Amino acid sequence: MVFSSTVFLFVFLPVVFGLYCLIPERHVRNALLIAASLLFYAFGEPFVVFLMLLSIFCNYLLGLCMNGKPALRKTGLVLAILWNLGLLGVYKYAGLIVETLDLLPGIALPVPEIPLPIGISFFTFQAMSYVIDAYRGDIAVQKDPARLLLYITFFPQLIAGPIVKYKDIEAQLASRPLRPEQIAGGIRRFIVGLSKKLLIADVVSVAADHIFALPAEKLICPLAWLGAVCYTLQIYFDFSGYSDMAIGLGAMFGFTFKENFNYPYASASMTEFWRRWHISVSTWFKEYLYFPLGGNRKGKTRTLLNKWIVFFCTGLWHGAAATFVVWGLLNGAFLMLEGSGIIPVDKMQKRPALRLISRLYTLAAVVLCFTIFRADTLTQGFHFWRTMFGFGIADAAAKQVGISLLLRELDPLFLLTAGLAILFSFPVVPWLKRKCTAPAVQVLSYAGSFGLLLLSFLYLSSGVYSPFIYLNF
Image 1: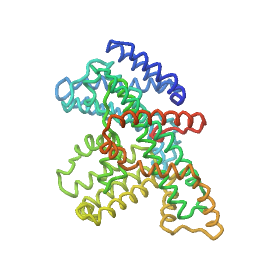
Image 2: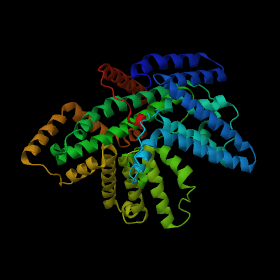
Image 3: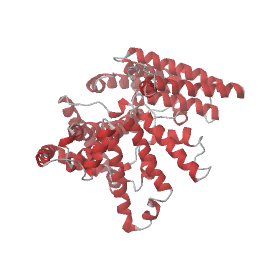
């Protein structure tokens, strides 16, 4: 459990940022950020901090092995992979492994119920990428444990990403100027992310939660589509909002993080979608799994197999549930169909008349995949699919109830929010920036950010804030 939103916004962040600005020495600033990050993570779950510190210490020692002879380096790499994947295996997949073993004749093991540490998928992948990059010679081994500690524990992106690779901020750990324009831009980016979460994601989530909680017999086609689309909007604005907040906070403290989303719903293929969606995790799997498997260098069949493996692991990374695995395999299947030309998205892009069809196909594929991702079980997800395509079973009375439920969800606030969500899912803001370059526009953008902040505070005062989706992964 981390700080509540009000404590974070009104106490923790102002105090830490104020002290950071007052301290001139770089090493003292780093120490402050480490202490603040550990406090942030430890609030309510002190034991998990020791687990994270143990993980960092082990990866630090294994990283030092990369300065040794080839045999020591290979041993250190193998141990690092086993340690990090083993940590994920115990805390995320032990229950799934035992449940699978219990399917075998004569085996009836008790299923362990191990609480999932917040952010374990993110800080474990960061630590593992550091050791792998050191083994490859892409980075110098970090001998200062404090810098490695700051890299992994830095609170803005600790619990839900984006996954930051060590080589991208190696120089910033040693030296980073604190410029007023960077701070101002970071604050604005943080406010935008907070607003995306509170004013859009949390509003459309109400309809999504209501609809996915309905009994199967009350679900009708329009409700199923509404719930699926609302969740598709919710997960984008929730997760991209968190990424914006992390990038903005990083900028306030002098760090520059790479973008994690690039308007993925504007994609014209599922291949393009995955270049724009959760960029940090997709590039992580590409660099540390897809390329080592051979990438596209060993023929078309092997390439397709490698993509299947990557997307199976991507689904499993999100959690030990069949819904996540099937979601990953579905995405992999779409990429395989596009890569083999069965779904000719490349040809469609060359013909203006077919471009719209390509984009609509991509949006439909994304919505259908996220329906399985959101469903509590595969049975529920498949029932949603059947209902969305008119094969759900509902009598006249059930249909009338479903229509009443649909009309209840479509209140004015929801319609306004959903309309804005759909609009800003596409690159409207970059287009406006290109069209409006006058200095007054910059001033207006900061004034607009202040207005969004006030609206966010009003929303928080209502007490209906919900946790970020990706805190569960």
